Amino acid sequence: MDSLFQSQPIVLDLPDADIIYYPHFFDREEADIIFAKLEKEIPWQQDEIRVFGKIHAQPRLTALLGNEGKPYSYSNIKMQPHPWNLLLQKIKSRVESVSGTNFTTVLLNYYRDGKDSNGWHADNEKELGTNPVIASVSFGAERTFQLKHNSDKDQKKSIVLEHGSLLLMKGTTQHFWKHQIPKTTKPIGPRINGTFRVIK
Image (tube, rainbow, N blue to C red; front, side, top):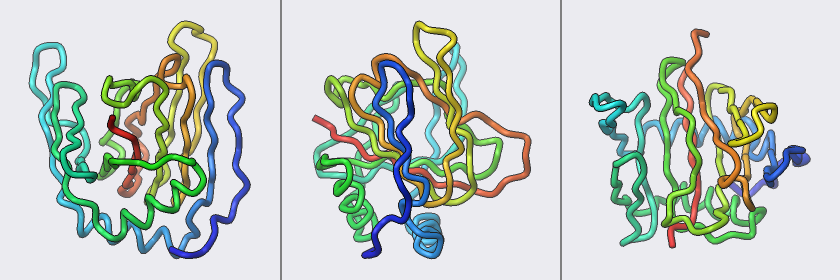
């Protein structure tokens, strides 16, 4: 976890947004090790969500790690944090060095295959504050990350989030944009994503 990231950041030219993408924030060997450890060691859970009055199993596995006493709520799910482990503390430190933010929490998502997904949403829960900084690291199979502007229908963007990458969303991004990881019919392997955030 000591090597410096090896890629130049890509700034996304989008209105009302401040998004930077680092394709190879972790080198391949390092990313492989991180994925294997997270897959094996994290206490994954599958929560139920209510969609149009019906109860469904969430289409991915999740886990919350963070500072004690900082629960996180979204989609009528309230998650209590597990304590930080050493690996995620190291990842957090690396991410903090480029984001300039001290994160309290990471929400982990485990996409087992292309059928697992995350629908349109913004990370705009009130406990995240006004202009939250969201740092998203990805390990495993590449997945398409889609963005759409809330009011300007012509403003859309898709990015392939690579193994070992970091996506940094700042400023007013969550006010004006939604994002998702759609399902895919392609035969793909599992992916683990961690979104670091500050819970006020």
